[in-house]
Length: 307
Ligand SMILES: NC(=O)c1ccc[n+]([C@@H]2O[C@H](COP(=O)([O-])OP(=O)(O)OC[C@H]3O[C@@H](n4cnc5c(N)ncnc54)[C@H](OP(=O)(O)O)[C@@H]3O)[C@@H](O)[C@H]2O)c1
Image (tube, rainbow, N blue to C red; front, side):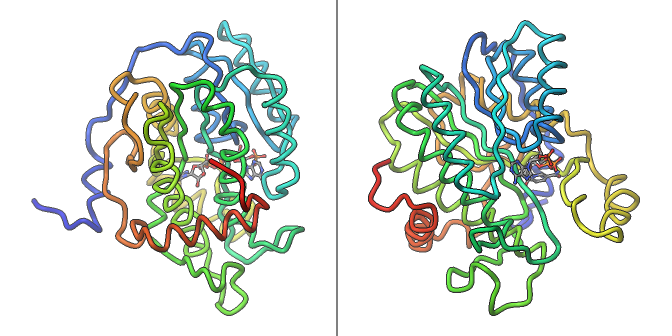
């Protein structure tokens, strides 16, 4: 059967996934949101592969548990940095510590993410999903970029989502002041913005030895959305979860993208787990991407900075 582009993610999600046994011994991997779900399983797989981990997490108590577990099970060194990605000042602090303490960054994985079913504004007045899922990862990547460039070859992986297909990005109404907030579209908007900036950064990084790719980690059982109301939590636990997959597949796919030798020169692509896939048309609009880049620089205070 020939699937239309818009539905290609359906057969792709059933394809056999690629794996690698190549190790990442001693490589410095910075990973956000490792206390749960996709990030937790990515951290476990990276630790198993020998990576030296810097886990950037908002909840130190949960992060310490992950660190203890990984260090007791694997010959690895895990550093925790506390940072709430709904606060750009904390993103800056985490990046500054990494730049100061680490001589190199081999892999950066921006995974932390949220889904809200009602509009919440951050203390800086930005819609929270857009801030955590897109602006924070944009800022974090840009701040770490000089060190990543010095570490070439190195890889950047943005944990994105098939949810980008929901659309919702309106540069004239990023905070949903003029529209009724819809959770799936707010989530989609953040993921579209992230994808559009991935293509921009991939272009800027050509010839540097640094790759950047985005990926969908599968439709997997995690805690995403569990911060919403009781009805949503009930829906997620009893209706959604039974249809979802084990998040270990996400960890395995992220490890593949981070370590596989055949991925060394691949940049500016979207992967459904490990399957190279064409994103939705609206997420390939390069003219819009340039505007998103500019707006993201303005909102993160990066205007005029290189990279
Ligand atoms: N699950 C899926 O089926 C699915 C599908 C497509 C894409 N994704 C993407 O996968 C990524 C991980 O999500 P998940 O499904 O694994 O959800 P999850 O289980 O809720 O994990 C999200 C992680 O992000 C962290 N996080 C949330 N808000 C944060 C903030 N303000 N500052 C710093 N860290 C924060 C969480 O920390 P706490 O532990 O403190 O909450 C947790 O470690 C997200 O980018 C999501 O969009 C997931």
